[in-house]
Every structure is written in structure tokens, then in C-alpha cells.
Amino acid sequence: MIDAMSRGGSVEDVAIVGAGIVGLAHAWSAARRGHRVTVFERGAIASGASVRNFGMVWPIGQPPGEARAIALRSRDAWLEVASEAGVWVNRCGSIHLAHRDDEWAVLEDFAATAPELGYDCKLLTREEIARHTHAANPDGLIGGLFSLTELGVDPRSVIRTLPGWLSGRFGVRFHFGVTITDVEPGKVRGSEGRCWDAHRVVVCGGADFETLFPTLLRESGLRRCKLQMLKTVRQPAGWSLGPHLASGLTLRHYANFAAVPSIAALRNRIAEETPELDRWGIHVMASQNDAGEIIIGDSHEYDSAVEPFDKAEIDDLILRELRRVIRLPDWSIAERWHGVYAKHDAQPLFEADPLPGVHVRTGTGGAGMTMSFGLAERSWERWT
Ligand SMILES: Cc1cc2nc3c(=O)[nH]c(=O)nc-3n(C[C@H](O)[C@H](O)[C@H](O)COP(=O)(O)OP(=O)(O)OC[C@H]3O[C@@H](n4cnc5c(N)ncnc54)[C@H](O)[C@@H]3O)c2cc1C
Image (cartoon, rainbow, N blue to C red; front, top):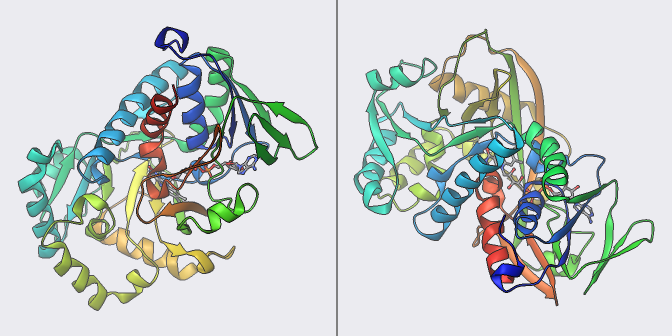
């Protein structure tokens, strides 16, 4: 434990609003510094973006520099927390598969500068890919980019397990079923009128822009994004996906590839050949959880397009594109759902301090599982 007193700080009462991954990471970071932490979650269990994702801890997707350093720091924290809390974590790595020449060109360009930018990755031939995974579709496969840094976690069990562990290990108190309706310096108020004192309040409300600080959030540049997801049944015993797998479509999605010269040609080809994929923001990825099920996604619809109704067309396109690049023993779909996250176009995390001792932290976009622990550590280093 990092003792706040021995670092010259004082022990604070800290209130965290929201028990998604951003709230839990900030609770962990505060508690390990010796602060007295209370977490408020309006649901009986947290059921926002943090339980609806792939469970991919994905440092490869972050651009070089500070963002990647935060992702790698988060990765270390995941390994520490998972080991202490008894949570399943898979050091599976990742492969971006290239089935088209323009996809391979992007991977080659990226790999050429990756080592000097600090990425631990290498190109694989199709034969080498077969040694890592039996799931890559060999039809048209050119090669892939292998990275060791990615982890797999089961988001549903993590978000349910960490509160109990934080309580037992650090004495963090949780109030589930309590909506915080008002925050002022030194105090939070719950939906039934009860108040709690706190030296510091951290609001980690995810994509809720209405309940707390609505004007600030409305004017922040934050957007809502909806993603459709699917999960297969459990694959046959012993069958393993191996690393997380991503297709060539994914190359246009993550910031690490944004500066690669050949990305423009790939974007143009996809826009001309398959405009329906751009229309719904579709790229395809697959991860496997510890139950052996394959989690599949995803699409991206923004702001006014975020509606409660899922589109069968999107699910069909995701499956069509994934079947082009991977093979599974059993494609039977067990579950479909969507998730909504908050995203800021210019920042990996939206940070605002609207009142003394009151901090708003949200907007981790598609990288909250990857970034939250590192971002929380950075927050607490600034505050103590
Ligand atoms: C489909 C999908 C796939 C994704 N895949 C990945 C992935 O593989 N890897 C990755 O790194 N990231 C991924 N992400 C992104 C990641 O899931 C999010 O960035 C992250 O979960 C956001 O966490 P959060 O804590 O901000 O929000 P949430 O998980 O939504 O949590 C916010 C919580 O705050 C509570 N709350 C809100 N207001 C109040 C209030 N006033 N009082 C009390 N409680 C309140 C809510 O009930 C909620 O539980 C994915 C996201 C989605 C949707």
C-alpha cells in the first residue's frame, strides 16, 4: 500500500460516483494510498459499458507517447489487481490479420517504425500465425501483426468481483442502488435525501450526461457512442482462440495506425467497396472468455443515432466480415446486446474540476478497460 501520510498528504474521505471500471480504478488508486473510500452506484449492480465490452486490455491500439505509457501502466495494474483479487486474466496478446494487400501494407508500414516508438510487436507469416491460433481463416491470408502486450479479462465477473475485494482488502464501502443527485464541495446527496461528507468527490458516471453537471457535460465535446455486440456459445472443450484477433477493418479504427502513410488507401478502398461498413462504423474483433465463449463486435453509432433498438443488419454485417477472417468450430450465437460509452474526440479521458475538491472523470471511449487504472493513478498522483 502507498501510505498517503508518509507521502506528505493527509488521509481523505473520498466519494466516488459510479462503480464502472473508471470508478473502481479510482477507488482502488485512492484506497491503496490509504484514503477512506465510499463508492455510490445507482444500479443494484453496475451494468453500463464496463460489463458490455470485449474484455480486451489493448495497449497496441494507443498512439505512442503518454497514451501508450498509461495503457502499459494499466496493464501492470490489471496483472496486480487480478492476482490479488483472484480474477481471471489471460496474457493472450493479439494478432491483426491481413487478408488484403492494402491491409498488409499498413501492417508493414507500422512494423517498420514500431520498435523505435516503443511497441513490442512483430510481423508473422501465415505459417507463423497458424502456430499461435487455429482460428485465422487461411483463405487469402497474407500475414499478421503479433503483439504480446494485450490481456483478456471477463468484464462481467471483474465488475462484480472487484467491489467485494476492494471492501475486504481496503475497507472500501459500497452503496448500490443509490443515485447521487447533487454534489457540492465536501458533500454528496443521494436520491432519498441522505447526505455523505467527503473531502474529495470523483464523478465517474460514464455516459450519463443528465444527472450531475449536465451543462458542463453538454458543452464538453463529449459524445455518446453505441456499439452492437454478440457472443457465441461455449466452443468445444479445449478449443482456444489464442490471441485476441482483429481484422484489416480494425486498422482504420485505432489511433496507433492513424499516422501510417498507407492507411489512406485502405480507408478509401473500404469506403468504395463496402460503404455499408463505414455507415455503421463496423470493424471486427474477437476475444474468448474463460468460459470458452467468443465475444464478437462491433459497430459505432453516435449521438442522435443512439437508440434502444438494435439493427439485425449490423449483426449480419459483423458476422459476415468476421467469417471472412476467422473460423470457429461453433458459430451459434448465445447472446446479443449493445453498450454505450462516452467519448471525447480530442482526449483519452474527459477531465473537469467543476468545484473545489470535485472532479469529473469520464469519456474513455473504446479504451476504458485499457486505460482506467493508469488514468486513475495519474489522477491520484496529481491530488496527493
Ligand atoms: C460494446 C463495448 C465494447 C468495448 N470494448 C472494450 C474493450 O474491449 N477494451 C477496452 O479497453 N474498452 C472497451 N470498451 C470501452 C469501455 O467499456 C468503456 O470505456 C468503460 O467501460 C467506461 O467506463 P465508465 O466507468 O466510465 O462507465 P460505465 O461502465 O458506464 O459506468 C458508469 C457507472 O456510473 C453509474 N452512475 C452514473 N451516474 C450515477 C449517479 N448519479 N449516481 C450513482 N451512479 C451513477 C452507472 O450506473 C454506471 O454503472 C467497450 C465499450 C463498449 C460499450
